[in-house]
Figure 1 (cartoon, one colour):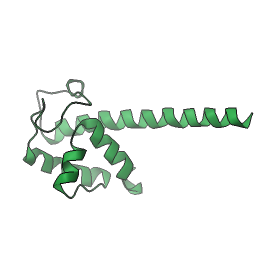
Figure 2 (cartoon, one colour):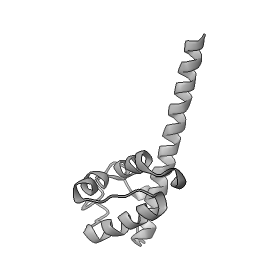
Figure 3 (tube, one colour):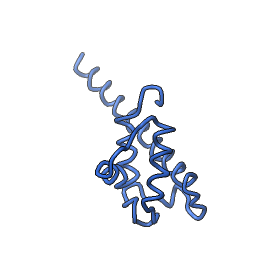
Length: 108
C-alpha cells in the first residue's frame, strides 16, 4: 500500500514540476520579447527548443548581455562566463532549466 502512495506522490510531484517548467518557459518567452523589444514576435512564435542565439530570433551578443542582466535581476541567477552562456542560451528550454536549477530561494 505504501508503495502505491509513494508512486502517486512521485507522479504528482513530477506533474507539478512539469507545470512549473512550462510556466517558466512561457514567462521567459514573454520576458525575452519585452526585454529585446521584439515587437513582431509573440511567445507562440518562439520554438521552445530552437536555437536561441543566431536562430530565428536573430539574437546576438548584445541581446544576450541584456538577457543576462534581466535574468540576474529577475531570477537571481548569474551567467558569468561565455562557455556557460553558450550552453544556457542554446534554447528557451535550456535557459528555463538553468534558471530552475540555479535560482535563489528569494527569486522563486
